[in-house]
Amino acid sequence: METFSVHGAPSEYILQEGSLDSLESRLQERGFQKVLIVHGEKSWAAAKPFFPSFHSVVIEEYTYSGECSLEEIEELAELVKGKSFDALIGVGGGKVLDLVKAASHFTGKPHVLIPTLASNCSPWTPLSVIYDEAGAFIRYDVFPVSASLVLIEPRILLTAPQSMLIAGIGDTLAKWYEADVQMAVIENKPVALMLSHYTARQCKDLLLQHSEGAISAAKSGSLNDDFIKVAETIIMLGGMVGGFGDHYGRIAGAHSIHNGLTILEETHHALHGEKVAYGILVQLVLEDKWKEIEQLIPFYQQLGLPQSLAGLGVTQINEEVFAQIAVKSTVPEESIHVMPIGDIISDQVSTAIAALERKYGNFK
Image 1: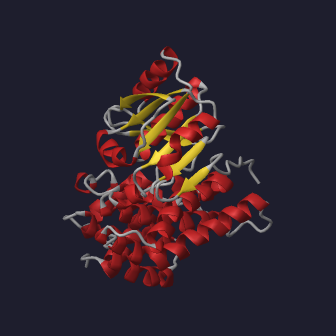
Image 2 (image 1 turned 90 degrees about the vertical axis):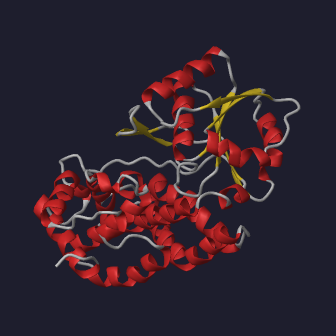
Image 3 (image 1 turned 135 degrees about the vertical axis):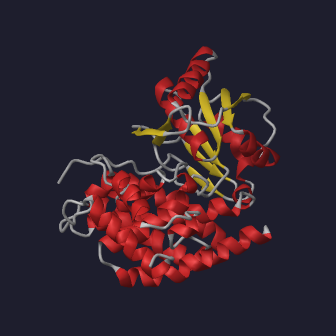
């Protein structure tokens, strides 16, 4: 078995109503006297009403440009070093938090994360997805140090766009399918992989059980147990799958299909988790797990997750389009190749998409 590294958890994690009230005292107990709060415009508008006044800790703010790019990381790191901040606080969605994690790594300064969306596991993981200035994916970096503190005010998450919550559910559902396809064939798993595999299964089970109630909470603006369960599944359990499983617990076929879909301009409006959700179905066709697909379809319909290309806004449904997706999703560096079902070529993926579209789409 290949070597893998375990990144278990942030040093401290708190999710409760009013959790930000204790922010200053928690910064002080860490010895932070001067901190930089990094946020986006929308995320700060959502979080600011819940922020306390600071009496002893000196704070400054920095509004990021909208991308976690190498240029932005360098600019933020220079600011942190130039003004001798003790720590960074990231307030926002995945890109803001990833930016803070990267700048923290390059400056050697600790960081605190306060998410404003329940749409990904970025608050939990010591990992940043790096983009170029135009927003195109470059790579992801894994860091040796996790957050000093993750502080979550669930009422902030509740006010986020429901589409982001649903996309987060789709993305986190993939944790099970992409981890299981790799781990199920490993007979003598190390304990860390056992934990990762079990946690991935919980991602699926808890989402199937609680998502409808969580979305109801988001619609009504009234916090409930379902919403908390789903938020923690997306943030905590989602992060633990890769944290304990390393590359065995990250991405496989579903995310490759997501990347393949980006070749179609019509899908650019669709959220990451929506495209990943469609990718789950294609991966399951490749595994010949049609019964699993049949069990998932009612859940997809309930949440409005796409079960066909038309659900992602694609109007031209033909074999040429399937081939375009398939070629991009099977380039040598793609994660689809970690699936232990032989060498996957573009023709197989194109055939799988066609089969799925015949059953659940408009392809004849």
